[in-house]
Length: 187
Length: 75
Image (cartoon, rainbow over all chains, first blue to last red; front, side, top):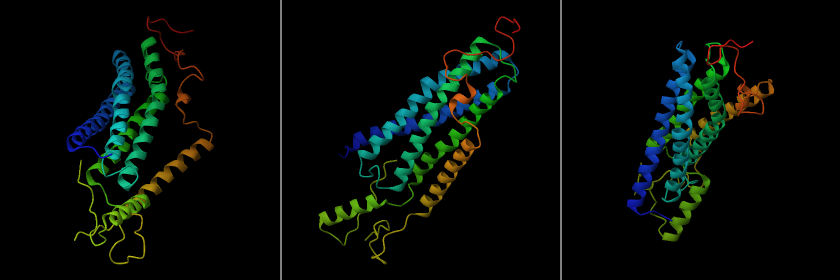
Protein backbone atom coordinates (compact mmCIF):
# COMPACT_ATOMS: atom_id res chain seq x y z
CA UNK A 1 0.00 0.00 0.00
CA UNK A 2 1.53 3.34 -1.07
CA UNK A 3 1.14 6.22 1.33
CA UNK A 4 -0.32 9.57 0.37
CA UNK A 5 2.26 12.37 0.00
CA UNK A 6 1.19 13.94 3.29
CA UNK A 7 1.48 10.67 5.17
CA UNK A 8 4.76 9.89 3.45
CA UNK A 9 6.22 13.21 4.58
CA UNK A 10 5.02 12.57 8.11
CA UNK A 11 6.62 9.13 8.14
CA UNK A 12 9.78 10.56 6.63
CA UNK A 13 9.97 13.25 9.29
CA UNK A 14 9.53 10.66 12.02
CA UNK A 15 12.21 8.46 10.49
CA UNK A 16 14.79 11.22 9.99
CA UNK A 17 14.15 12.64 13.46
CA UNK A 18 14.48 9.32 15.23
CA UNK A 19 17.49 8.20 13.20
CA UNK A 20 19.48 11.39 13.62
CA UNK A 21 18.35 11.61 17.22
CA UNK A 22 19.71 8.09 17.79
CA UNK A 23 23.05 9.16 16.38
CA UNK A 24 23.16 12.27 18.55
CA UNK A 25 22.16 10.37 21.68
CA UNK A 26 24.96 7.86 21.13
CA UNK A 27 27.41 10.75 20.70
CA UNK A 28 26.28 12.13 24.06
CA UNK A 29 26.52 8.66 25.56
CA UNK A 30 30.09 8.37 24.28
CA UNK A 31 31.01 11.63 26.01
CA UNK A 32 29.61 10.25 29.27
CA UNK A 33 31.43 6.94 28.81
CA UNK A 34 34.75 8.70 28.24
CA UNK A 35 34.12 10.84 31.30
CA UNK A 36 33.33 7.79 33.40
CA UNK A 37 36.54 6.14 32.25
CA UNK A 38 38.93 9.06 32.55
CA UNK A 39 37.66 11.43 35.22
CA UNK A 40 39.47 11.53 38.55
CA UNK A 41 36.48 13.08 40.28
CA UNK A 42 34.51 10.34 42.02
CA UNK A 43 31.28 12.31 41.93
CA UNK A 44 31.68 12.93 38.23
CA UNK A 45 32.30 9.25 37.54
CA UNK A 46 29.21 8.23 39.50
CA UNK A 47 27.11 10.87 37.75
CA UNK A 48 28.38 9.75 34.35
CA UNK A 49 27.38 6.11 34.79
CA UNK A 50 24.03 6.97 36.28
CA UNK A 51 23.35 9.33 33.38
CA UNK A 52 24.46 6.66 30.92
CA UNK A 53 21.86 4.25 32.21
CA UNK A 54 19.10 6.85 32.00
CA UNK A 55 20.19 7.95 28.53
CA UNK A 56 20.38 4.39 27.27
CA UNK A 57 16.97 3.27 28.54
CA UNK A 58 14.94 6.44 28.03
CA UNK A 59 16.53 7.98 24.96
CA UNK A 60 18.70 5.64 22.92
CA UNK A 61 16.60 2.47 23.04
CA UNK A 62 13.30 4.26 22.18
CA UNK A 63 14.95 6.18 19.36
CA UNK A 64 16.56 3.03 17.97
CA UNK A 65 13.27 1.18 17.94
CA UNK A 66 11.50 4.20 16.44
CA UNK A 67 14.12 4.44 13.73
CA UNK A 68 13.68 0.78 12.86
CA UNK A 69 9.89 0.90 12.83
CA UNK A 70 9.63 4.16 10.88
CA UNK A 71 12.17 2.86 8.41
CA UNK A 72 10.03 -0.21 7.81
CA UNK A 73 6.95 1.99 7.38
CA UNK A 74 8.85 4.22 4.95
CA UNK A 75 10.03 1.39 2.80
CA UNK A 76 6.85 -0.66 2.78
CA UNK A 77 4.64 2.39 2.27
CA UNK A 78 6.46 3.71 -0.76
CA UNK A 79 7.56 2.31 -4.10
CA UNK A 80 11.08 1.91 -2.75
CA UNK A 81 10.04 -1.30 -1.04
CA UNK A 82 12.05 -3.20 1.55
CA UNK A 83 13.94 -5.67 -0.67
CA UNK A 84 14.02 -4.02 -4.06
CA UNK A 85 17.04 -1.76 -3.67
CA UNK A 86 20.37 -2.69 -2.17
CA UNK A 87 20.71 0.56 -0.26
CA UNK A 88 17.40 -0.04 1.54
CA UNK A 89 18.31 -3.65 2.30
CA UNK A 90 21.74 -2.74 3.65
CA UNK A 91 20.19 0.01 5.79
CA UNK A 92 17.76 -2.50 7.22
CA UNK A 93 20.50 -5.01 8.03
CA UNK A 94 22.72 -2.39 9.65
CA UNK A 95 19.86 -0.93 11.69
CA UNK A 96 18.78 -4.34 12.96
CA UNK A 97 22.37 -5.21 13.83
CA UNK A 98 22.90 -1.92 15.68
CA UNK A 99 19.63 -2.35 17.59
CA UNK A 100 20.53 -5.88 18.68
CA UNK A 101 23.96 -4.81 19.90
CA UNK A 102 22.37 -1.87 21.72
CA UNK A 103 19.88 -4.10 23.52
CA UNK A 104 22.70 -6.47 24.48
CA UNK A 105 24.66 -3.54 25.89
CA UNK A 106 21.89 -2.45 28.26
CA UNK A 107 22.93 -5.15 30.71
CA UNK A 108 26.52 -3.95 31.27
CA UNK A 109 25.30 -0.36 31.25
CA UNK A 110 22.82 -1.06 34.04
CA UNK A 111 25.44 -3.07 35.90
CA UNK A 112 27.94 -0.21 35.82
CA UNK A 113 25.29 2.24 36.96
CA UNK A 114 24.40 -0.04 39.84
CA UNK A 115 28.00 -0.39 40.93
CA UNK A 116 28.60 3.35 40.59
CA UNK A 117 25.53 4.09 42.71
CA UNK A 118 26.66 1.75 45.51
CA UNK A 119 30.41 2.32 45.59
CA UNK A 120 33.08 4.81 44.70
CA UNK A 121 34.90 3.55 41.67
CA UNK A 122 38.64 3.95 41.48
CA UNK A 123 40.31 4.33 38.11
CA UNK A 124 41.33 0.68 38.17
CA UNK A 125 37.95 -0.77 39.05
CA UNK A 126 36.11 -2.59 36.26
CA UNK A 127 38.42 -0.95 33.77
CA UNK A 128 37.77 -3.49 31.04
CA UNK A 129 34.02 -3.04 31.31
CA UNK A 130 34.36 0.72 31.22
CA UNK A 131 36.61 0.62 28.18
CA UNK A 132 34.12 -1.72 26.55
CA UNK A 133 31.35 0.85 27.00
CA UNK A 134 33.50 3.50 25.32
CA UNK A 135 34.41 1.12 22.50
CA UNK A 136 30.80 0.10 21.87
CA UNK A 137 29.62 3.72 21.86
CA UNK A 138 32.36 4.75 19.45
CA UNK A 139 31.77 1.75 17.24
CA UNK A 140 28.06 2.43 17.33
CA UNK A 141 28.61 5.94 16.01
CA UNK A 142 30.61 4.61 13.09
CA UNK A 143 28.00 1.95 12.32
CA UNK A 144 25.18 4.52 12.44
CA UNK A 145 26.98 6.61 9.85
CA UNK A 146 26.35 3.88 7.27
CA UNK A 147 22.54 4.22 7.14
CA UNK A 148 22.88 8.00 7.18
CA UNK A 149 25.22 7.97 4.18
CA UNK A 150 23.10 5.45 2.30
CA UNK A 151 19.96 7.54 2.90
CA UNK A 152 21.52 10.63 1.36
CA UNK A 153 23.40 9.09 -1.52
CA UNK A 154 21.02 6.22 -2.32
CA UNK A 155 23.57 4.34 -4.43
CA UNK A 156 22.07 2.57 -7.39
CA UNK A 157 21.51 -1.13 -7.54
CA UNK A 158 18.37 -3.23 -7.57
CA UNK A 159 18.22 -6.68 -6.08
CA UNK A 160 17.11 -9.60 -8.18
CA UNK A 161 13.70 -9.30 -6.56
CA UNK A 162 13.62 -5.59 -7.36
CA UNK A 163 14.48 -6.21 -11.00
CA UNK A 164 11.78 -8.85 -11.26
CA UNK A 165 9.23 -6.48 -9.75
CA UNK A 166 10.28 -3.77 -12.16
CA UNK A 167 9.98 -6.07 -15.15
CA UNK A 168 6.53 -7.12 -13.98
CA UNK A 169 5.55 -3.49 -13.70
CA UNK A 170 6.86 -2.72 -17.18
CA UNK A 171 5.08 -5.72 -18.68
CA UNK A 172 1.82 -4.88 -16.95
CA UNK A 173 1.98 -1.31 -18.19
CA UNK A 174 2.35 -2.71 -21.70
CA UNK A 175 5.16 -0.34 -22.58
CA UNK A 176 8.49 -2.10 -23.04
CA UNK A 177 10.04 0.99 -24.60
CA UNK A 178 9.54 3.09 -21.51
CA UNK A 179 11.84 2.24 -18.68
CA UNK A 180 10.71 3.12 -15.19
CA UNK A 181 13.00 5.51 -13.39
CA UNK A 182 13.77 5.50 -9.71
CA UNK A 183 10.93 6.42 -7.37
CA UNK A 184 10.64 10.03 -6.31
CA UNK A 185 13.23 10.84 -3.77
CA UNK A 186 11.70 10.98 -0.34
CA UNK A 187 14.75 11.73 1.78
CA UNK B 1 14.16 8.17 -22.69
CA UNK B 2 15.79 7.58 -19.36
CA UNK B 3 17.67 4.35 -19.14
CA UNK B 4 17.69 2.74 -15.75
CA UNK B 5 20.79 0.64 -15.69
CA UNK B 6 19.34 -1.42 -12.90
CA UNK B 7 16.88 -3.15 -15.18
CA UNK B 8 19.25 -4.71 -17.64
CA UNK B 9 17.37 -3.11 -20.50
CA UNK B 10 19.65 -1.60 -23.09
CA UNK B 11 23.02 -2.72 -24.37
CA UNK B 12 23.91 -6.22 -23.30
CA UNK B 13 20.27 -6.95 -22.76
CA UNK B 14 20.81 -10.67 -22.43
CA UNK B 15 23.07 -10.46 -19.39
CA UNK B 16 21.57 -9.50 -16.02
CA UNK B 17 23.06 -6.48 -14.26
CA UNK B 18 25.85 -7.32 -11.89
CA UNK B 19 25.74 -6.64 -8.19
CA UNK B 20 27.08 -3.10 -7.60
CA UNK B 21 30.64 -2.89 -6.39
CA UNK B 22 29.70 -1.04 -3.21
CA UNK B 23 27.44 -3.94 -2.20
CA UNK B 24 30.27 -6.41 -2.74
CA UNK B 25 32.66 -4.25 -0.70
CA UNK B 26 30.12 -3.93 2.09
CA UNK B 27 29.50 -7.66 2.04
CA UNK B 28 33.22 -8.42 2.25
CA UNK B 29 33.65 -6.05 5.20
CA UNK B 30 30.66 -7.62 6.96
CA UNK B 31 32.00 -11.14 6.41
CA UNK B 32 35.43 -10.13 7.71
CA UNK B 33 33.88 -8.65 10.84
CA UNK B 34 31.86 -11.80 11.44
CA UNK B 35 34.98 -13.93 10.98
CA UNK B 36 36.86 -11.69 13.40
CA UNK B 37 34.08 -12.15 15.93
CA UNK B 38 34.07 -15.92 15.48
CA UNK B 39 37.87 -16.10 15.80
CA UNK B 40 37.77 -14.05 18.99
CA UNK B 41 35.16 -16.43 20.41
CA UNK B 42 37.20 -19.50 19.45
CA UNK B 43 40.30 -17.93 20.96
CA UNK B 44 38.62 -18.32 24.30
CA UNK B 45 37.31 -14.83 24.87
CA UNK B 46 33.67 -14.16 25.45
CA UNK B 47 32.12 -11.21 23.70
CA UNK B 48 28.80 -11.43 25.40
CA UNK B 49 27.55 -8.66 27.63
CA UNK B 50 27.96 -10.90 30.65
CA UNK B 51 31.71 -11.07 30.47
CA UNK B 52 32.12 -7.92 32.54
CA UNK B 53 29.29 -8.64 34.94
CA UNK B 54 28.82 -11.21 37.71
CA UNK B 55 27.78 -14.45 36.03
CA UNK B 56 24.06 -15.14 35.92
CA UNK B 57 22.95 -12.27 38.08
CA UNK B 58 22.72 -8.80 36.72
CA UNK B 59 20.48 -7.65 39.54
CA UNK B 60 22.90 -8.02 42.44
CA UNK B 61 26.20 -6.29 42.12
CA UNK B 62 29.48 -7.38 43.62
CA UNK B 63 31.27 -4.17 44.51
CA UNK B 64 34.80 -3.92 43.17
CA UNK B 65 37.67 -3.74 45.65
CA UNK B 66 37.71 -0.23 46.96
CA UNK B 67 35.84 2.00 49.28
CA UNK B 68 32.13 1.83 49.81
CA UNK B 69 29.93 4.84 49.67
CA UNK B 70 30.43 5.74 53.31
CA UNK B 71 34.19 5.50 53.07
CA UNK B 72 34.60 2.16 54.82
CA UNK B 73 37.34 0.02 53.32
CA UNK B 74 36.24 -3.41 52.24
CA UNK B 75 38.07 -6.23 54.07
